[in-house]
Amino acid sequence: MTPRPRRAALAAALLLPLAGCSSLAGTNDAGYVPGDGQVVEYEVGDREGPIELSGETVDGGRYDLAEQRGKAVVVNVWWSGCGPCIKEMPMLTEAADELGDDVAFVGINIRDNSAADAQVFEDRLGVDYPSMYAPDGQALLAFPGRTSPKATPSTLVLDPEGRVASVISGEIPSKTTLLTLVESAQETGQ
Image (cartoon, rainbow, N blue to C red; front, top):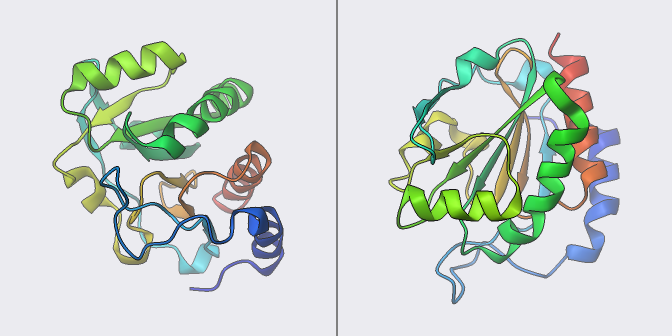
């Protein structure tokens, strides 16, 4: 795995203010492992095969990631009791609106007590894209080894072929960071 130097340098500059805020050393009082804010981007040749992921959404529907092939996809792992998740959600919905139909967004709720609780949270924050309800963590097994989300929140950007192009472990540092990663995934995945 070789992170792209140019993008990695940009990400490092954007993340300096977050250094030391949290670590993967253990769980905090909220009972989840916070991310360290690390952004990793994978070269095309270093990407694993397409992610296969499907399941029930918080609104009772079905979601199949394979239906999004041909466009970049932003996958955000979250739950409504996670402070950083709450903080970044408005930025995610803004980015989803800005990118429109050219990029798909999907959430994976891994911790709420019920799909109804997750749906209330999304409704309150105006989230228009689907979220899978996966409190058993099974949905995370779709992401192999080094790309497996290890913190809450985590955000993965998939290229148009469905391969993980980048991972943000922890809160997304900025909308600019996310848009840059999406643009890179679109360019390199075609």
